[in-house]
Image (cartoon, rainbow, N blue to C red; front, top):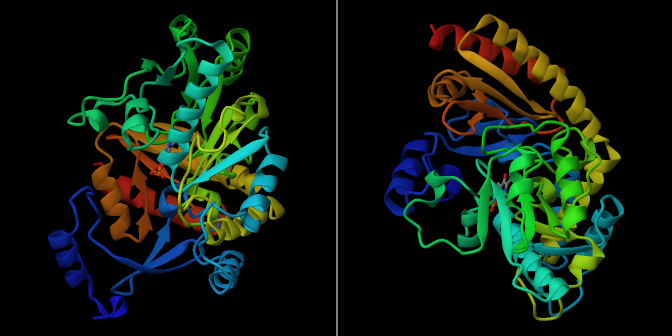
Length: 403
Ligand SMILES: *Cc1c(COP(=O)(O)O)cnc(C)c1O
């Protein structure tokens, strides 16, 4: 049976029987996409405000992404990092030209990008201070991935339970609390790893003084400031990188999600002084930065920059936030509206799951961010009409589900 000919019922049955049960999936199967729209196996159309969890910044099947993918697929897919790879070098150059960073290491996912950052921090701090300076400070409610080290960095019990023993060398403090970080930093601290806006943790935007305060603290102590921009990067929040909102440059930044327009990629960017800690043999990835993924990422990032999509995200995000604030004023079940650019959320007074399901029934895909937060991460190419449609569905769903 070819995948195109499978009906939803069969797909769900086979998945239930043969896949490990790590996901609580929605009971539908998406088979095709175009821009901000997707279609399921039964032909029903949806407005996609999930966007592959902040991955599909250019929407589905963007012509620039499709063209790059087709061309590279017929040229060279994979050769390993034993050789030089032209699009990998070009992508690194583009990232460096448009950020604080001097050098880039490529991997295949967000967790791997953070793993590399954690390893880099340990190696740098040991060498720079000739001491046992190995500890990483991370924030409660944060999310950094599911490998053992990044799971340990993810200071949330619900993800960690059952997987102990965790990796030594992490210390947790509350998010958004500069004093707490100041008190936690000591002679063993190698780095602070933090999201500029917490994504999975509920779309939590810190006070304006937070990132600049962390920068100052790191300058005073020699601790590395490592920003996890895996969800916030590549234009999502209205600037190419979220740190630009606060003018607080990191020493290390991790990227993944939207960077390759839908293909799997991770990137760890760093300033020269700490990037130098990695030498031949220090770290590696067989697939990392392969010709296919970096060629497509190059096309995707060039398009994001050339089409000024961060500015568009800022504009559309403000428009979406305004529509959501209207809803919040009318429905007491909405406790708060949060976000920046097109990383946006409604905090509810009840579990968000049933509302997400009701939206889906009405042809709108949204997701949660924790128990009571309904999150939206639409493609950055979204327009007013799509935002209006999403707001209409939410209004209808809030009116009916939240009596
Ligand atoms: C999604 C995410 C990760 C993990 O990325 P994976 O590609 O799933 O490993 C890490 N950090 C943040 C902030 C994320 O949003």
